[in-house]
Image (cartoon, rainbow, N blue to C red; front, side, top):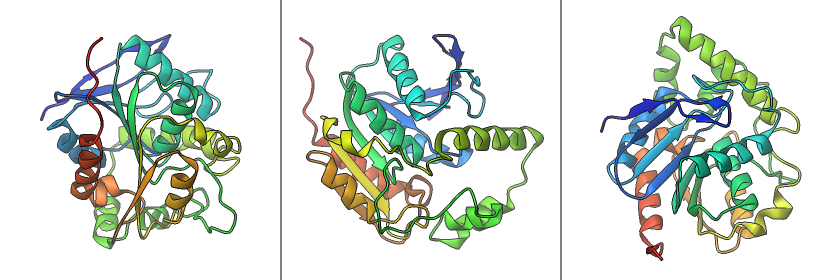
Length: 264
């Protein structure tokens, strides 16, 4: 499946948008690293869905707008994105901070959404659950701690970045810090509003997640009405990279149980 990249201008902010496939629109919200490792996962999804995979403002090839200060700004941006792109009945899939972003969108306005499938979402703090600190880990340790299988980390560490790649990494790290540095990887106000998520929600977690422990899945499922949770064995923080086939199977089964929306 070939993806076409466009650069829509959303209220003055131009973003890089990959799109490919047919079917129900699926909006993929990436995590802290908008890297090529996600492409095989998107290709699998595009066999079943009309996949839209934007790079968030401040990441990759997208603009760095002056107004971007926190995750709430991104949530409102994507509400504008959904409206301007005339998207309805959207299946939202988010990873890590992308999952957190999906929840921030849903508690504000879910009228254009069909469902949420979130892989290891950040966004809340649970006392007593030990979390990793991605901002303090040295670069190599951070990469190794993202995976259960060391082979994935070795491949990532062996890749030789271009000058453009290095620029993108620095840009992504800067924006990630703006969104999630303080407090670390959560919004202190999100948990109390998760009851407002009124669309079917699936939480998926890697059993060996060193960034956010898998026990977080239970807390999200407890706070979001009707949410289901699934733990993937032998998997770290990036199920879409390490266990993409299993993740696609889970979200396909989940989405297949959703009611079909007919035109009025």
